[in-house]
Length: 82
Figure 1 (cartoon, rainbow, N blue to C red):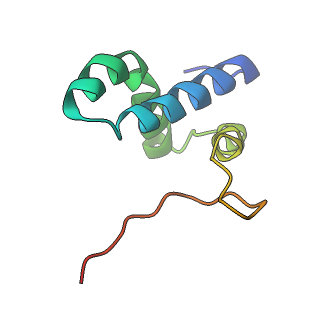
Figure 2: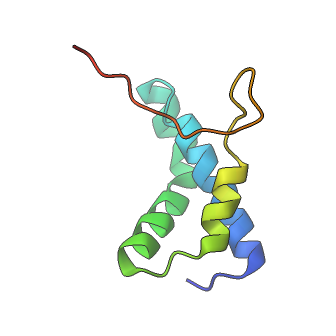
C-alpha cells in the first residue's frame, strides 16, 4: 500500500468507522462494517510488516473521542471482571 496523506486520512477514517460499527450487534456489524473492513486489514498488515506510518497513528489518535470532563483523548479499555 502506498501511504500518501490522502490514503492515511482515508484509512484512519475507515479504520475508526470499522471500530465503531464493530460495537453494534452482529447484524449491524455484518451489514455496515463490511465496507470498512479493508482498513482494519491494511492497518494490521502494515503493523505486522513494520510499514505503518506514524502519520496514520497520529490520524487515528485524532479520531478518538474526547473523554468526558477532559481535554485529553484516551484509548478504549476493556473492563476486567473479578
